[in-house]
Length: 313
Image 1 (tube, one colour):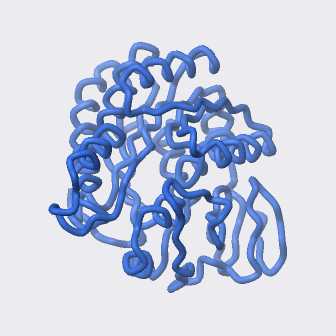
Image 2 (cartoon, one colour; image 1 turned 135 degrees about the vertical axis):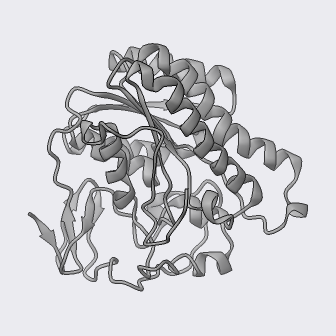
C-alpha cells in the first residue's frame, strides 16, 4: 500500500504536506472565508482520497470495485465531504453526478478534474435546491445523464453561526430548513420512482443532532430532523429492498466551517477525543460502505465518524 510521508505526490488533486496533518492534536490555523467558501483557499487543503497511515503520513484509498456499474447523485458535491464521496465513488467504479450552487462553480470544476484524473465519469449540475422544482429537475437530469439512478446522497447543507435564538431571524431559519431537510425530502421523493431493490439513499446528518451543541439552532434542528427522516423513510422503503441510512460526521475540515463559524468556534474544532479534526476522506469511506453490499443488513441506521465522541441514538 502506497504511503506518503516527507515527499510530494499528487493523487486526486491532493498534495501531501511534509508533516502529517493527522498527528493527534493537530489543529489547522484559524482562518475564515466569505460564505460559501472555496477549498482552494484553505491551508492545509482537506484530503479527499488519502487516509491516515500508521506512520502518521498518508496512504491512498484502496478501491475494490465495490460500486462498479452503479449510478450516483451527490448533492453538495463540489467540495468537502461531497467532493470526497464523489471521488471515492468514482474510484470504486460508480458513475457520478454532483449538484452545486452557482457560487461554487470553481470548486465543482476542480472536483470534475479530480474524478476524471482517476479515470472516473462525472456530470455537473448547477442548481439551487431550495426550490422544489429544481429538485425534481435535478433528479431527471441525473437519470438522463447517468442512464438511471442507484444511489442518492443527500449532502448539501447550510449553516451560519448564531449563538442565541434571538440572533436567528426567520429568513435564516427557513433557508436552513429549505436546504438541509426540505430538499432531502424532495430529492428522495423524485428519486425513488427510478430506484429498485438493492439501491440506497444516504443522508448527511451531524453529531450536533445528538449533542445539541453546534453552530446554530436552525442547523442543529435540521440535522435532528434528518435522523428522524432517515428512520421513517427506511421503514417505508425496506419492503422494496431499498436501504436508507445516514452519516453523522463530527467536526470536519471543509469550506463550510471556515466560511460560517467565528474564530472562537474554529479554534475549538480539534477538541475531539482523538485530538484532531476529521478529513473529508475519512468521512467518505462511510458512504462507500453504506452504498455497497458490505452494508446489506443495515437500514435506518446512522454511522458516527466523529473522532471518538460517544453518542446515544
